[in-house]
Length: 405
Image 1 (cartoon, rainbow, N blue to C red):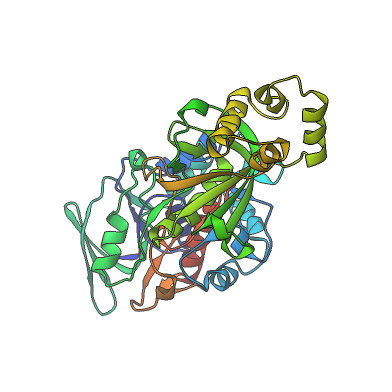
Image 2: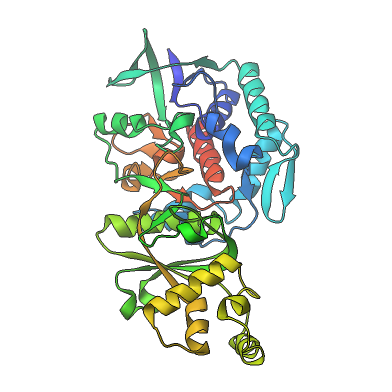
């Protein structure tokens, strides 16, 4: 008989296990893979961006959800406007020294392995039992216990945590199994979709595949012909990467969750790009007027990549055979792509959607309809932008469960 059975072996599961075991609880982890934290090892290209100092009390800047009440949910969960401090305190408690790069927080070693080794050693020290390659067949709910049928064993626990992770990174173990398990327990789940992934464009971008450019991207829904501030869904700035399928880069990843929701609603999604956000129109006018003997592509190449300059000129000629400098400048600041889809779960860093927040008490992440059942991490209908926000959420949701049992 266990005090706590945790299904999953990611960051939420591990922070929960450590926190609960430190309180003297008998804990077992059921992990479907052959080792813990496969996604953690890959986080931040192996450097593991754990959290971020750039937080404010308005959490809408960092997270997405289908629930209109998710900001209040996060305020209650995090308890303060500085969840990064709680994360760092937890990391310090297992011996991890952190290192800041701007506002991004990493292990001092800049290796995810140092975090995983510390967590593994802590679990061994706390005598947490781990059962690998565990396939959950069924969970039976009794009066005061849960019976988990797993592989060739039947495990009994007073409390159970669903920390199965999401469908992202299939090659690292991402599956739909957690959501399917939740549904067998009559727990409502919202539709899921990839997030922190690339955006596929309707337009053919093969001519500029591989180009990188600093830009401002505005995500619009519905019809751009009537674009207003009301249908600007999100704005991001950073390095844009153009690929054979469309748009990529961190700035695009941060738009992908909202873009997915627009497309699922049946509306059209557009990204409007400003390729010269820091250059005043007068400067561009002067470049063209003072060097009128040069080709438009050559003049644009003073501002952007030559392939992209050619792409802009071709778009302008296609849309308007006769054009002047003002038309070029307008297109440079308002280059529009229509989005036809996302790149999919195989390349997504997180999953958008999941267990409906209305099913969860944010104080302790307990499932309202099942006393003694909890959920943590990516399985819930909250996903963060790039920068350590998803690991922050995973660690704190896991801790809240471990603290409350």
